[in-house]
Image (cartoon, rainbow, N blue to C red):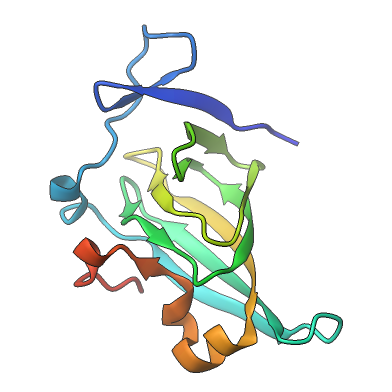
Length: 161
């Protein structure tokens, strides 16, 4: 399995940890985020888990056009396993390091995780991920799919499709 590479942020630019010689891509700022393309989110499955009463498994296929960016968000208390199907994504959770994760790479988001950066690393090629969530059934039944990607308040006017 491919392992993500850790990057540190220096002057708002991610650099491979321990190296400061290669400029990769600027991290998004609130001002720029509104002008970048958004990913397309498609629900692909939803199943109540009979061995875990009150829990539902939901699969979301996320297609990132080139240079696309998702605003900072949480996931309604879900535990999430993510697999990068194609392309390369830039990922930052909570106060952890920013990581560049290529096709075949994975990550896990614990319930309550604040997903600060979820971007297509490429400005020319698309990327795609499959996010498998385990969430309280009540969250899905009461809030629908919109309850699974809860954007930070300053981005409330943005709608993911």
